[in-house]
Image 1 (cartoon, one colour):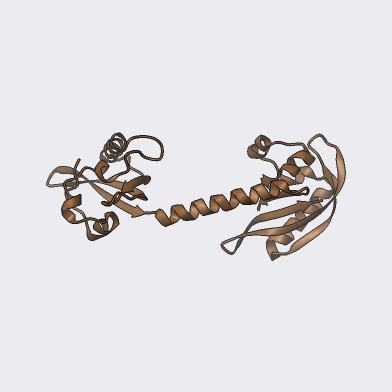
Image 2 (tube, helix red, strand yellow):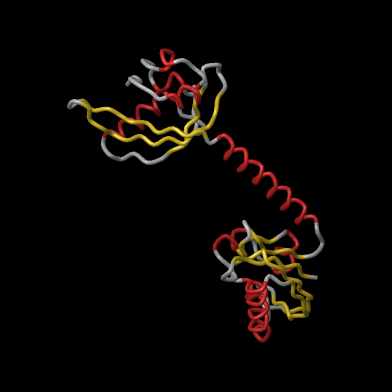
Length: 219
């Protein structure tokens, strides 16, 4: 499979002249190996075969500019016929900045978790339904559950004695509706059923200006 034509945006993206791109195979302006470990030649053939059979979906691809610099893209391959000849139309979008943002966010979240795990107080986060999304190590130790159990699905209200769950739910509703900070004394309950008194402070978690859940500290 060879490139038979391209637009000016493709030339700017790859930093080359038209004759340096047209006539080349896709793997020739790709990184030798893709992030999943597969070589570009083999994987490009697989993607083209899928597109020709109508099975193409957007996918990420590591391309390489004319000067050798590698960069991340999102690609969509679409089959078309010109004069009864089967061809592939490729839409390629540079996602370098998106990848940088994702990596910065990942590092920020990792740093936050590392710091949270050093705290002697319990820190945990839940979504709008009360499903537990994150707990620090102190939370695991105090309440007697594991990361595996968290990933299977736990409601935050499980960690309160039955008589305090309704009050906590009302507090969470108020926080979500009005973006307030709320605190109070509660009777907490471990997975084992053992109870103990705690003081909980809650506040909303914001993302892009919208409330997506709440964060609690427990002492």
